[in-house]
Length: 319
Image (cartoon, rainbow, N blue to C red):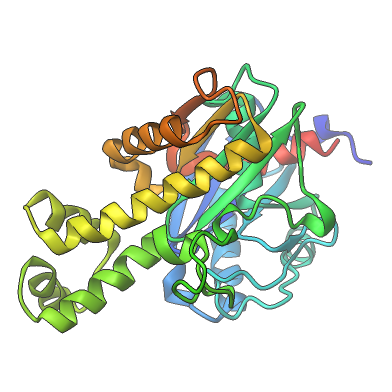
């Protein structure tokens, strides 16, 4: 395989359900420049998004220097073949050959990783999970994902299907999830679920802060629900309380099964610090069969860029 030392820099791509980030990294892993695309502008049209990403890469290229491309994307993925298979959070992305696309376009080494696995790798190597051999990572954002590091290595499971923490069933016959099942953690506690429930309540009630925000913007986002809750809106508080409670259930389940040394929480929902405190309290109360008082539950130190860093670290790990 090509010696990684021939690469003068790296391009990382993090394809997300809400935003896609493209970054140029120096050999010392410094993020030198970053560009952002709103993924929703290309909904159900992966080819156009890939073309837009290619244009951003052209802007980031350094003349006469060699680079490799690392990609992180929502699962399920076939990391060996470089295929994004059919993620619930990327409608229309059915068997998209992303690695082949960029390999043909730029003629360089390309590797693909599940976004939560990439984030877990980054947190383990250079982030909040550094110093631990066994960690799990939760991304709490538009969707809910997970990554597992066991003895310093990503655990991918059979056909790259491990770590889908958001699709554990936490409420039998609960809300339908975009994966097709019912009662998934993602269907109850994700940013998507919070905004969905808020819109439903606002349209029924036709009054209150949420309804006024909806009338003004034509949409309700998870951050709108957090804002309304901070203003004393009881409906928003109930929606968030339910979401946080089931996050506690899901994280407790994972801790009980895997007993990691450290749990890293990332994604936009963790910008609300009290969510992490509430999760810690829930887990400490309910987990009985793992040494919960010794297990660290920490916020991601890499923030929104954890998967982006991980996409590049995955290149280095692949050699």
